[in-house]
Image (cartoon, rainbow, N blue to C red; front, side, top):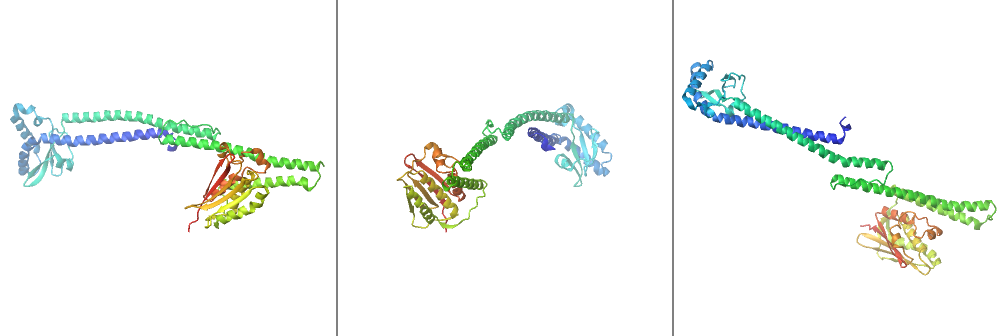
Length: 458
């Protein structure tokens, strides 16, 4: 039931409850302190009067053996004190109208000059404010000073002051609590409204930042989340459009070629079947690339890791591409450290990484150029670089080389059969090995891809 009440109202009620409890606690403690200390103050002021009464009471108890008939003794003694004080009876604490109380040894009130008290006085009050009446070395009773009209009036004024002060403080606290809770819940309501709008599809909405506290940090994080969602949605839409386009291109080529064969425009021979076969291979490669990316995004890209020498893998992959490089008039070289470059990795996946990078380098390196593979180790990592002397990548394109379906040279890449996913897959596979890949390039000079993989320590 409580969780259905708005947060602002719950905070305000909690604030008010805490204030009320504090006011009541302070009032109780002040009232108790006044009761104790003021009573002690009155008792000190009346001490001489009580001391003059004590001998008569001791004589009465010694004669009677109890407090029976003590009223006559008390009345006679007080009348004698009043006559003795004469004109000075109206001054000082001694002439006050405070009632005199007498209790027995157990605290039962046996006499009250005002005639209003009865029952038993607390033991703590007797020991703190009472004057013990002793007979034969034994305490037989206590003399106390009761509250007179002035004391009653004083305490009632104290209580009234506490009550009004507490009410004023509570009112101010309530107003401050309402203001504070409204100020606190306002940005939370803004976050709630923003979440609803983003949930409804408005990914462009952002929460206004009005503070730099924890709620302001939350709003900032929320806005960053909104920006990330907007970017992901843009990437998703662009990727869907790119996938549709990439699939449509080979399908269109195959359809046109097949229709020409069926209509008799082309002869059914090897020459006219080769384009269909090439587009089929392109489709298969695109589908495999998309599958690898989907597995990587889902965190389910399987790796069969084992201890391996990355230097020997670089040599082996380079050897498999030398005939292709020679056919293109490109020199393919390797520089591998003599000592073993031990890592813990999936050889097949790393061959795929190097193969994609070498293919990409050969694709963009002109006749007479070179592609060089370097592999070396440092203290914690194994570093592999694929360096080409191609046309380079423009600075505007350099930040997007690992984006999916991104092509710096759209027409050339499609003509050469690239899917636009190779470098994106390379990045995912390197990161799956807890490594990192970076690129540096200069137009008309060349491009260098650098892979860093963690070294396997013995």
